[in-house]
Image (cartoon, rainbow, N blue to C red; front, side, top):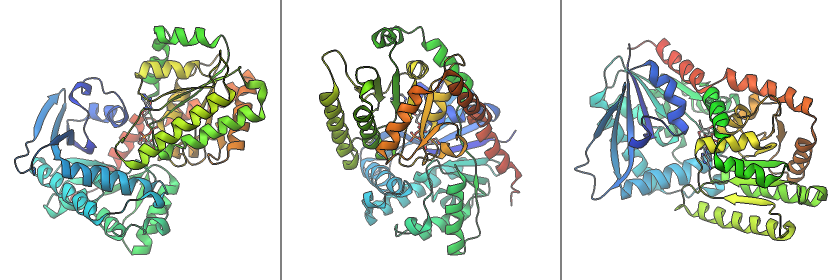
Length: 447
Ligand code: ADQ
């Protein structure tokens, strides 16, 4: 059995290794079960000094060996906060104007990729399948090839890839594209992303090709969470509190790509245009703070505080709060149970690679009384979820109309939409995603 080597910026924390908590760890669980596995990346820890005496921590749980290294403060700032999250993230989400471009950060990004390669290469065997994840590690394949690594190497980009006319505003974009040649398989989430990336390859005369591998969730386990979560005391309290009135839910990391101010303005428009809902509906937005030390994220937080305050101050009553707003994460079971309790979900990113929340919302519903998904056309998930109420997240009137429609659909209409969405969420799962990417890597002949 071939070994699978996963490389990602963050490796699941020690406490999550038995029961992964979310994100990539959950998505990869199926793949990891089928293969002996080495998972390499950053430990999440910052270390003092210049990193010269950096150690590799190794920990094995079941068939997975986790190998991690720390990053110095300088590396954390330049590689992670600076180049990955301050430059590549906004650019790939079509927000070139938010890039804080810095050549200094670019150099640290390149050097951390080289560091990853230098520490990983000695652990690799020629028949390993190496699967590299996401924008933090675009150049890693090339850095491994420079060290004569012969194993198959694949790359999956979890976030969108913009048109070349936009991407090229990054000075290193041509070099990053050339580095991608080192990979045997290049995967992206949607046809749009593949078209954009392949256009860039064509313009630059690079013989490489991106292919589409849409990611999904583990719907059975999420549905089980939603069922089991119903007995949690918090769920019973929320249900009592709602007194039978409909709940609208939003769950997103606090990120400007998620369209949160625009969504709240849509809800504001909804309460303005359809005053009959005042006092008759509750919107619960759960938005844990992320990347809190990047300035754009701090100003987003202030903006959200302001809009939520404005809506609650304008429409609220002594016995009714229009928006309930939390800035901390919730346990999965509670989240899933809240999804089941809600009549509608607002998933309205301005851009999103896929958006797993949309799929989780569908998985958490029950056939007797399914809720309605309101989904941005610009989420990767929209490509295969046409039975959601699709909206332009910039258009507050369209969001308001979709909310009105979601809350007025008949039971049979909701069921028809949900059944089709459900089929899709069970068709493309985390397991099928991992299996098809690994199958594509297996088909590649080694040198
Ligand atoms: P993210 O941008 O993090 O992922 P998403 O796909 O929605 O976005 O996944 C977020 C995950 O975090 C979901 O599993 C969700 O349940 C969980 N989560 C969100 N808010 C939470 C809260 N308040 N409490 C607890 N859990 C919460 C990136 C890309 C996406 C792509 C994924 C996977 O940006 O486009 O779908 O990777 O490839």
